[in-house]
Image (cartoon, rainbow, N blue to C red; front, side, top):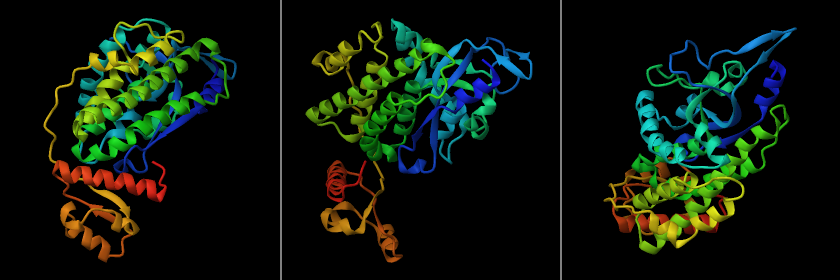
Amino acid sequence: MTSSEMRSASKDACVLESLIACQEGLSLPVRRLFISAVPETKLQGGGGKIVRERVGSTHKHYYAGSIFGCVLGAVIGFVTTKDERVCDVMRRLRGCLEPVGKDAMSCLGEDAIHLQRGFASHHAIRGQLPYLHESKMSVRIDSRYGKKSVALGVSACVYFVLSSLATRTENSVALLYASSMWMRRCYKMLSHWNTSSHVCGVFQFQALEAERRALERGAHAFDAADAEAKRTGLDIHNTLRLKLAYVRKAMWPPGRVLDAKTQAALLDWVNSDSFTKDIKLQREVQPSMNITINVPLSAIPMLPEHSKMGVGSSCDSQSSAGSSLLSLSSVNSDVCEREAVNALSALLREEHIDT
C-alpha cells in the first residue's frame, strides 16, 4: 500500500460519542487499522515495526491484515477520569479483557479469526499513525503497561468501555439507560460504514462484518438481559452486571462457530431460554449510591416530593442561582432509587427527549 492509499484509507472512520455526562466532549474514533503482530521483544517508538520501501517519490507499506477498531491510547483516554491514574486503567483493561479473550480464543469460524485479532495482539503499523489524529492526542501510556498504538477491535472496545464505567457506582443509573442505546448506535454505524478506499480488497472487509455481527449479538443480549432483570426484580447494580454477562457470552460464545451462516441461529439462541439458563449470576448487595440526575425545572411537578427524594441544599443553591436544571442527590435507598428512575423515565417520555 502506498502512502497516499494509506492516507485515504485512514480517513474512513465512524465516531462513538460520549456515553454518559462525565465524558462530555470526548469521542472515540473507530477506523480500519492496518496491523503488524506485536513482537515478543520490545520496540522503540510508538508503533509497530516499520516495514516499508521507497518507491519513486513515495513509500510502499506492508502490513499483516486489518482490524476495525481503535488504538489503545484513544480507548484509555475515553474512560480515564481526572482522579484516575493511567496505569490503574491499564490494569483494569487487562483484568477485563483477559478472561473475555479466552472465550474468544475458543470460538471457531471465519468471524472468530478477526475478532481474536482485536484483543490487543497487534499494533497499528507505524506508517499509519501520522494519519490518526487520536494517536497524537491520546494519553501517555508507560511502556511497562503497553503502547498506545496497540489495536483493539470495536467489540472489545465497547465491552471494556461499558465494564470500566460500570465500576463507578455513580454511573449506574446513567449506564442503565444509555448502554443499550450506545451499543445499538455502534452497530448501526458499522452497518453504514462509508469507505472511500477499497485498496484492501474484499477479504479485509470481512473483519468489518465480523465486528458488526458481534455487536448485533451484543444488542440482542442487552434486550434479553433487560427482560430477565425485569422478570426477576433485579436492582440497578445487578442489572448492569447481568447485562455485561449477557453481552460477553453473546459476542464471544465459547466453542461456537461464528460466521455469516450461523448468525441467525446465534441470535435465536441469545433470545431463547437456554441462553438465559446458561448464565448463573450471584446477586451482590447494591452499594450505596449518591447520584445526580439533571432534568428541566418545568418537570418538578412530575417528580416525587422533595422530602422523599432527599433533595438537599445543593439543589436549592442551584435553583436560586437561576440554573435551568434540577439535581436530585443522595438517593440511597432502593425505594427512592426506583422512584427517581421511574420519574426520569416518565419525564423523558413527556419531554420527548431522545435518549
